[in-house]
Image (cartoon, rainbow, N blue to C red):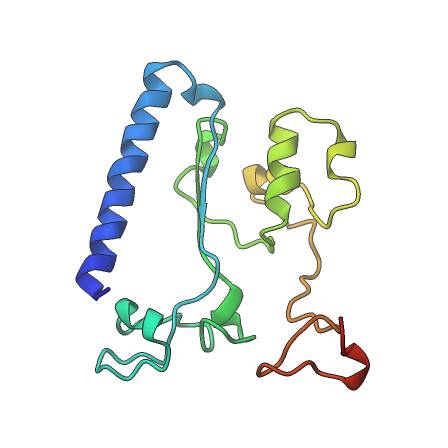
Length: 171
């Protein structure tokens, strides 16, 4: 796929989201809706747009920048895992709409946050690493999350097609 196709996919998604939002409003479901869009990783900064992308599937993105964050996709630098997210909802206080929140949140926190919004009991998140972020988001206050684990290595990881230790044979 080329960049034009990629941008076309984004435009199609935007149109589809508009159709869904219109339907939610038409059927009086919008007042209790939270729409969350979030990225999964930073952009592939090694592509200059001159056919030099080492990963063929990344070539469609063309030149990208995660500035001011260092590096990008498939790295452990901030540019690889700090991403934007957008929340749209009438449940957000008017003072918090069209603002930003720079609190630390992990993708696992979506579960506890939406469980709270759905009025599930706190036990629904027991045994997970998920933390409810809703009160921090709506207040603009500090995140209750203090750390994020990433690049966890264990005997199940495979590095360059080879298991990392002899003791892992057969696992």
